[in-house]
Image (tube, rainbow over all chains, first blue to last red; front, side):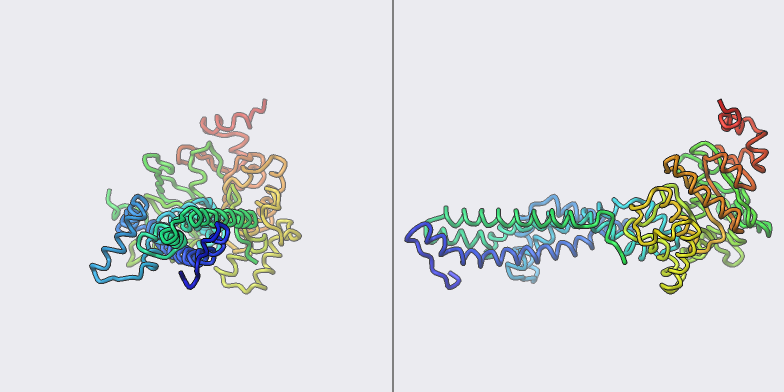
Length: 229
Length: 272
């Protein structure tokens, strides 16, 4: 598989021989994670902006969409994108469809992260900016956002990990991410224990690593906002 | 009552020497009437203190002037121009955002909670608006910041962040920040209410110096009666959205005419 052969002579030999194959799967997992996350943070920002629009004609549909996305299973959305869109002439590769489904699902959650982060900034900051006659754009960009970002980033980190853990869902549309690769190895060797255990361990290592990185980041971010020189 | 009659009945120009002029102003929050057909005037260079029980609408007067709250009825003139309205074809229409931006240049405000920008140094707090609103160069703005930080006695703290300063120092930075926009009117909304008692004095003495040495028009909401007596030309006692009594501090604090004022000031008039 992927030009690698497995060696079933011993458990240890089997494990080491399939490790590079699983790594190929992991690469796909990480690619889907990064692409899904990127879609989610951009789309989340758009959703957050639409939801806070003054015009109800804009904010209400945005809220409905956001609620709808959050309250329906990821798998349903994935099937919808994968099987229904082609009927209307939109055919996307499985990988892209999967990343899009992940991004869509998490954009709804992340839009709430943005909203909460921005709303956590005391109203007095906006009022002081207004009293100084700063433009609304400058108030948001230079006063509010730099203070909101340190509150947003740790939550975004947690969602990045969640997305990574949801990538195996994409195996149902035949994306060759890590779990799917492990399952195929199991199907062909009749040994599921070792590849699936390895997937679990690799996930555990990755999430623990991510947790450490997020905690470090959280501690280093200036609590009062990003200093401006 | 239609808007039409409201506007035309209220469009009389204020006296030439008044810099702030409230004419029949009504402000409501839901069912609560905060300002009840208020008439109020401040002359150029005058130092006016507003006292009164909480909920009497004192802070609302300042917040309306700073355009942080809207009004429901009446007309306010600032420096001879309507604040919340614009004149168009001889009639007063609600002000556009550009008009409000223009009007805000007349005023600077100091808040109870300081509201300094915590992620900016003291210098950046003071220079942000002069650079990005008035269009000053960095060097000009820094020189100006130096000048006003000196005035409030904090020129050696310019590179610190607000969190590294005491409450009293933070409020003095906030005063410098407002002054750096060179407003004609300074609004102080309970500037010492959030401070520890031992830090109140340093802020009050800065405000008193400003009052004595500058021809700024000053409007102060405060609970510091002694300070109000020292610093103001006129004291206004507010209750239930109206001015119950006003006059020189000697009158209001020594011999108030109204029952309601006497009642409010009883602890001050007859210390236990």
